[in-house]
Length: 142
Ligand SMILES: [Zn+2]
Ligand SMILES: [Zn+2]
Image (cartoon, rainbow, N blue to C red):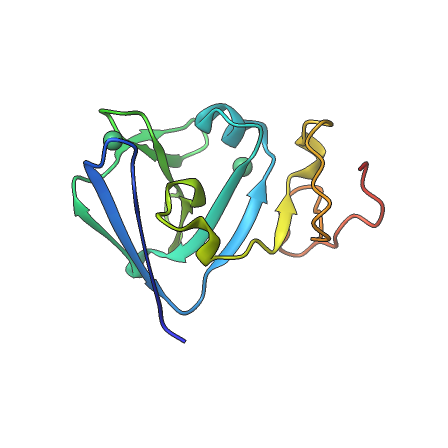
């Protein structure tokens, strides 16, 4: 099935379209995402760079000490993207989707940084840090 997903920032100057068959959606509890976006955790859609098209303005990029590009709207401040320089995927904030319910999260990452009062009984696996090459936590602190 071929999906097309649209979204944009709060003020509407940045609009994007994602065309992809393959979107992984994760809840990230790391402290960098938390502070960057200003929420208790961030839900990201991981998409191929080639499947993302901006319509109108592109996000302003803040490059972090660890060479991550965090994109945001310079006018309204919405957090839009996260990209590790050199990788062929980019993460987009599901909170800026026109229809966040069009995608389904599959896991929680960086659980060791999760705020204890964030409790989501969604049955999804929790990973201590990144999920690639590691096993989910058996009995995480609910
Ligand atoms: Zn904006
Ligand atoms: Zn994160």
